[in-house]
Length: 157
Image 1 (cartoon, helix red, strand yellow):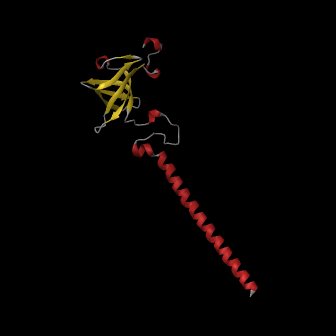
Image 2: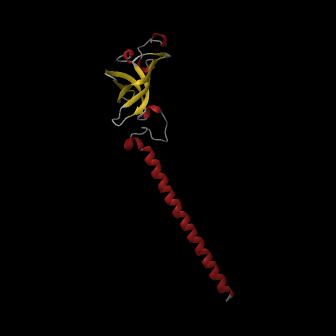
Image 3: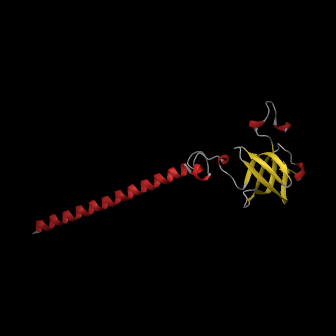
């Protein structure tokens, strides 16, 4: 009878260990599936929702984001209190100029009428319901190196 109880205890212990191992492996499998899904979701975020083109886990570069709060690019249209800026990734953003918008060229404050077609600007503002940017700050920037004519230096801008 003592050997029977010992054998029965061994079978119960082994069965319990087997069940624990099965539960652990099931958790491991589910966790791997969830992690794999999250990784693929992050890598395809831009295609689905307009996030960074290279995914979240590759090189972060700010020019990959669709930014609702600002834009850097070239002025391609000036009309009334609105300008249209073509960003580096060829997207056009409509920017509304408010009365309290600060406009600067280097350290000098300038007025809205000083903005010109072709100026490179950096704009910070807030998005409105129409997908436009209501500008708080507009800063005229130097021509980016990639767009400068050969031989043009910084002090010639």
